[in-house]
Structures are given as C-alpha cells and as structure tokens.
Image (tube, rainbow, N blue to C red; front, side):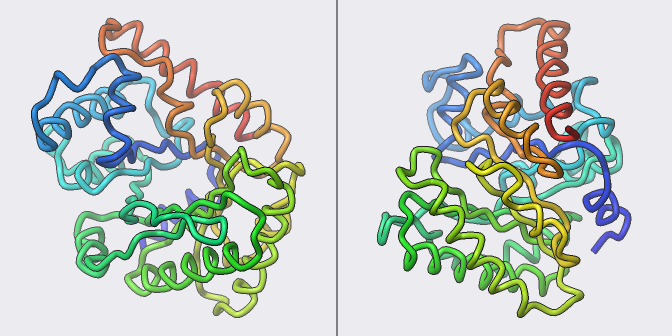
Length: 295
C-alpha cells in the first residue's frame, strides 16, 4: 500500500472521479458524449473510442489534484496508456491523482429485492495485475432495490467477503452497496444496510483499511459514525441517477461525505466542443462537485 496515497485519501480535500464505465454502460456514456454506436464495429473499437474520451478528460488542465483525490478506472483503461505511460502511472506521477480500479463483473439477477455481484472467477489474477499497475484500491458495486432484510444481509456479506480478499493483496477495497434512489422504502433500506455494515466492521482487525461508496442518504449525515471508525479511510457518494445539481445539493447537506460521481461529472461534456469549451465545462462541473464535497 502506498502510504502517501493512503494519507491523501484519508485527509485530502476533494472528490473521486468515476471514469469506470464498463462494456454494458459504455455505449450510453458515449451517446451522452455525442458519439453513437455507428462509430464502432466491435467491442475493441468501442473501447478505443471511450479511451479517447477518458484521455481527453484526464489530460485536461481542468482535471487536477487541486480538486480531485482519485479516479476510478475500468480494467481496459488500466491496461492502456496515456501519453506513453500506463494510465495509473500517468494519474499519480503526472497529476497526483490516486488510481482506483473497478473489479466487479456486473450484477446478478434480482433476488430478495437486491442484485448481488456476479461471480468473479478471475479476481485473483485481476488483483495481481492491479498491484503490478500501481493501483491503490478497488471498487465493486451491488444494488439494493427493496428494504428486504435478507437480501441486504446477503449484499453486505458478499461485499465484505470479497473486500477482505482484496485487502490481502495490499489494496484498499471500496465496498459499494448502492441503494436505488427509486427504492420505495429507501430510508429503511439504508438503516438496514448500515446496521449490517456496523456488525461486520466491529469484527475486523484494527489494521484493516477499507472505504464505502453509498447512495446519498435520505436522512442527512446517516453515515457520520461510520466515518469515525479508524478502519474506514473514506465514505464517498455516488450520484445514483440524480442530476448534477440535485446530487450536489443533497451531498452538501452530508458533512464529511464526498462525491464519487460518474454521469454527474461528465453529463455536459460533448465530443464536438472545442478544447476551450470542453475544459471550461469540465472545470465548472469539477468546481461545483468539489464545493459540495467539502461543505
């Protein structure tokens, strides 16, 4: 574990940029950016196109460590280069931004009101690769659709089980049990989820380090006590389908909770913008998300 990166993640001011759209979500991200599916003929060409978009974001003069603590990458992005450097090395060495890797393989079918993560048979190989690429930590997502106690317990059990495997590789796992913003009993689901998290946390060794990525809660500052646990490096929030303005407004009410936004970060970026327009649009988004994150 890189101690300098750990210190930055524990106490730095800023937020996490989520640039980790995978195969399933990439076409939608590119369409928002202004590129439709006629621009590629297979997955490899599609990943070439999205890497161009991500490279434009990462190399932008607006994308700096003054406001951004870390960036979450998709495996394909980790394995590519920017300006001749491996992406993670470019982020840290050129930008001072901590590199994090998405490791889940998507969601299983819904059962008991939740979607667990699909099996990850190549997880050990991926984690070994992450270490070689100088990745600091990982992220993995599952989704809670209903306030179903059994389903929520299953989600948290799985998140911690996989998280501990990740920690054994010297990486800091980000556990992401997302509560769908359309969950009919969202507040109850979040209470159940937090209770399960706290049960697991108290049984972990004191030297264990992990993070959480959560939906902005219905009850402001719900996760304040979670942030105080010495094993918890940071608690960050996903935008979850809220617009940038709405996500920022909700986030700002939750002290200590910082953003880890994807769509809300890039929602106004377009391929046909001039570099000046693109950089100005990105800067505006970063400034607003940063302000909400340090409120």
